[in-house]
Every structure is written in structure tokens, then in C-alpha cells.
Image (cartoon, rainbow, N blue to C red; front, side, top):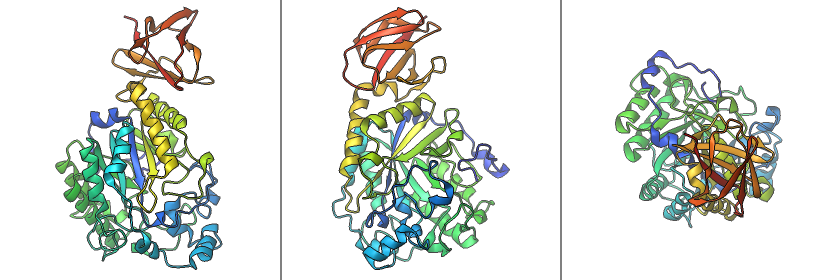
Length: 442
């Protein structure tokens, strides 16, 4: 599959979908992800670590992803299974769908917070691996949020609020896993079986077509893979779904988690799959915490602060990518307070210094540093140094690329001078990180 692979191969029948990456996506810099489902009711996982930093032999039984709860509670002897027995008496997972009421959910409020970050696009889950759909998807036999739980078309509410804020709208769809439809054993290792049959491939195809027809998403964000029976061309193939998508949304984009088929951009996750972070067609996704779904076990040490979120965004942009930063909504529909604080802090920084990220490109002629922390970006004729230094800021410029006479913070000129191969900027600004901009020398 293409996901996380360094050299995936497009089959011949999918090469016709290749196209230049649309400028709106390349320049967006930041998207906001939302994971929300019945798993938000128990909101439980072990905060063991980031994907890519936890040993694979420990990952599944000690999964930090709360949205994997339906799988983890089926792994014999796992802490999640013990928790489910002790707290819920071993009740079936679908009891959480009926207990999920979304009683405080206001899509307009959520999207106001999202838009204030400066994000260019928003991607909610429409069906995660538990198989519950957040709209009345075809052939779900009432196992969706319109018939049960919230009794609302949550995808429609997200779509309307997103577009009212002027953002691009995407849909996440888990094509590679559906624990309800497939009725396979729990996943406890990397090579566990996944659904590959014709019945599931056609079921998933019809869901994706329905999402396109109803909501006209700008992004199709698949996950894990696509059932093998659906890769070969045919009336209910993935190729047909992509053709339908691009006909409806010519400027749309798809990610690389649709099996070995087609993609417009690559994806990494936390610190896993970082080998694909090359060029200018990639996106790093992660939660504000260690989980995508809301996890009540997470405390401040597991969460990105606003400053850490700023650094992550700038680092990703300085290397050519976009950041897709996830919110795990509470079952009620509220943004958890700590996550809201991170988003608001990120938005506040972007209001002042977003010119160093949005629409920016890497500046490879100037080298990043980790101590002191320093990243470089470029927009048109300006170069931006984003650093955590205070007071007297020292910026290496060995090739003399930067015109010190044009130094500024925002629109405010500041004093800069040369000390050999280094520019010294006197900045009293209290914001950290701070973005200092220069024109390039003629």
C-alpha cells in the first residue's frame, strides 16, 4: 500500500489521475482534523506515546488512540479490555453509539475556533474503523448518527459551518478497516487480516460516492488502505470513485491512504512515516494530544502547548509540508478546554506572524537550528526567520542573502547589523517564537 511507503507504485489504470497539486492546498499550511464518534463516550486509552515512538509489539494492546477503543477492548488481557469490564460491565461497543447525544454540539462554534487558527481546510471523520457513519450512509441499516445517538447528520452540519467560514471542506473515510462490517478478529499485530472482499469494497465505494454527491468535499482523506477487490477497474471500483470526485470537484485532492492506487499528496503521522516528507506535496497529521479521539486520560504533559503547536507548524512549512492538527471532541460536542487553549494560542500567533507560514515555501539556502531553535521560510521576495531567541537575536547568513536594512517584525522596521556571517537583530518583542522578516538582496 502507499501509506508510509517511500516508493509506492501507481498502477497503470490510476496514472491518468496525476495532476499538479492545486495551489490552494499547497499554500494552506494548516488544516484542522476532527475525530468524533461513539469512542468519545468512554474516551479512554493509555497515553503510551506517539505513533512511531512506541514499539510495534506493544502498540495494539496498549494503543494510545482512543478512537481504536472498539478494537483494543477485544484484545485479550489488554488494559482497555479490563477497563471496559470494570467500568461498563463488558457491555457491547454499540451501547456507546446510543449513549452519544452530542447535546452541546454547535458546528458554528467549533468552526469559529478552527477558522481563528488561520487554517485553510477542515476534515472531520465521517466513518472511522468502528464503522459508525456520521451521516445516513447507504446500507448502514440504521447504524449511523441520523438513526441513533445524536439523531443528526453531523457531516452536513460540519460542511455548512466550514463553508460559512470560507474554509475548504474535506471528509475522512476509513476504507481499510471496518470492524463491524468485516467481523474479523481484533488487530493485534501489523499483519492482521483486513477486509478485502467484493462485498466490503462495493459497500465502501457507495459510501464515498454518497459523500461526494451530498457534500462535494474538496479533500478525500482515506485511511489505512482500500480493499483489494475494489482496486481493479469496474463500475464500483476506487478508480470510478476518483473519477466521480474529480468530475465533481476539479480542484479537489486525495491523500495516499487508498492502497496502491493514486494520491495527490503523501502523509506522515506523528513521528511515523517521516521518510515521505519530501518535496511540496505532503502533510503531517497528529493530535494535540497522543490520541486523535478524545482521551480523558491525557493530562497537560501529553498535549501540545500553543508554543509547541506554533513550532510544529513552522517546522512543517519550512520543510515544504502542511500540518493537519487534530481536535478530539468530547462526546457532548465541546472542544476540550486544554485543546481549545492550544488552538486559540496558535491562532493568536498566526494573527501576528502567519505571513511566515501561510503561502510560504522552504528557503533551503539558510540552515535551520535546534539550539537555539530557528526555522526559515520564504514568501515572494521576503525571507522569514522564526526563532525562540529573545532580545539580541543572532541569525546565521553566511552567503549574505538577507538585506539587514529591511529587517522587520510584522510591518514594524527593527534594527539589524552584521557580525561576520551573522545578522544581529535587536528585538524587544515578547512573543516567542518571533518571526523576523527580510528582503533578499538584489
